[in-house]
Amino acid sequence: MSIVTVTPTPTPRSTDEGAPAASRRRFIPTPKVLILGVVAVVVAYLAIVPLWFLIQGTFLDSTTNAFTLGGFERAYTDDNALEMMRNSIWFAVGSAVLSLVVGTGLAFLNVRTDVPFKGLFFAASIIPLVIPGILYTVAWIFLASPDIGLVNFVLEPLFGRSVVNIYTVWGMVWVEGLHLSPITFLFMVAAFRAQDPSLEESALMSGASRLTVIRRITVPLLRPAIAASVLIMMVRSLESFEVPALLGLQNGIYVFTSKIYFMLRTYPQDFNGAGALALGLLAIAALGMLVEHLLSKGAKAYQTVTGKGFRPRPIELGKWRPVAGGAIIGYFVFTVILPLLLLVYTSLLPYYQKPSVAAFKSMNFDNYIDLMHMSKATTALKNSLLLGVGSATLVMLFMAIAAWIVVRSNIPGRKILDLLSFAPLVIPGLVLGLSLQFVYLRVPIAIYGTIWILLIAYCTRYMPYGMRYAVTSMQQISTELEESAAVSGATWWQIFRRVLLPLLMPGLLAGWIYIFVVSFRELSSSILLYSSGNELLSILIWEQFENGKFTTLAALGVFMVVILMVLVSIAYKLGAKVGLQQD
Image (cartoon, rainbow, N blue to C red):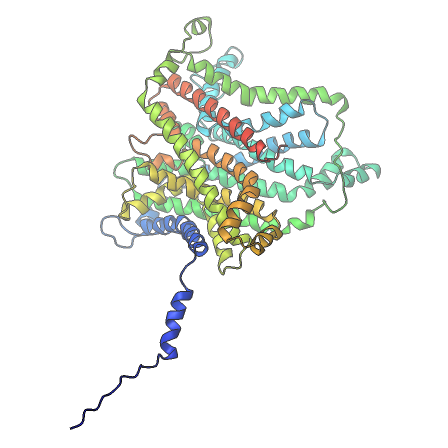
């Protein structure tokens, strides 16, 4: 018997088995891929998920979970639905036209003429941007309310009682249009500065009158800027909540946003109906932005700035210069200084009363002292600061990396990421608040009713602004710097952190300041998402208005405006040290 020893021979490893292992090794994500992937997922999550749940919540019955169109039926066949839509259109169009007239007139005087006080003029033109919409509206209630308005008090001996009534559609248009005019002013200032005045000078030398030049040359060249401004202001007016809620609801005047708020604040809550209105508002806003995008594509035909240098020459106003200066001062006293002074005056009274000797004698600081002992005020200030700093920091940090993907990389789908980051621009604040309600009432993540849901709302809402700031800054930096660092052996993260981030800092800081300001005063999405214990300053002001505590409200408003101005000044000074460009 022989023993056969069999030596096991190693089984040769087939190439088919080796390939997956090699593939697995190749697909181990690097830190760069991880960072870029997380940013892309977060942007997509913020943009898509609220919209998906808004649609789902609108078409699914909340009790039976069955498909329904009942929300649309209740929302759009109501007896007052037609009037609500008519009010919305009048309010949006009127506000856009008023802001265009005021903003364009101010921009023309500032850029194209030798009007006096230009430095003060420019600063005063954009002051309303810092004043929260809710405070600006309340200030106009003190001025033009038929019962307590100072203007009516002054005009009563001449024209009788209640000549001016702010609680009408036209009152809403007036307040919203004036509050939006600084944004139009900034739009039109840029347009006027980019306009070549030699075209107008040539026409004047050919014998055309000044009016003909404005009608045939100036206005046509400004057409893209005017169209963009009107459409954007219309969308902003449609999504406005403060003005329609404070002025319209007093007389039962509803627009889309105030009707959505009403449907969610009455019992039983009609989520399907509110969702139907929100989708209608979203469709109108998206259509407006689409039209604006299409019109801006033809803007190249109106370009007058070329490689040759030119310097706009201001038009001499001559004998009209003092008149223009006086008109500008009168405008700012009436629309900016007077509302603010009235807030300060009211904040010093024990109860609201018309200006009189007795009223001035009763002035004290009790409302401010009460604020110091109001626990809600301290909580609201902390929350507003936390959300302002948190949302501004997170948005600019994420958008800096997202901008690198869009501008620098060749990653497939980068254009989709750009579109996703821009998408929340067409979502009105109240609609976003409703969408997030749908999301976190259905998703088992315990953040509903906490401050974190507000942080998500702010990051989503202001993501488009952060992206524009970051992309613009990234496009100004040459790729040679990154290539030099890469040749020297630096990793992607080292290049981003030590080369790109310092160069991007001026643009990122400008975006940070803007997002901080608008987050600090935000109301429209917060009004649906806050809960007791998570109040914000804007919510606290809203509560004081609902309770009729006008003097406390005024003190809180003055406190808020002062804090905003101090914080913006500090941030602006810090920005100047890292190269923030000043006009």
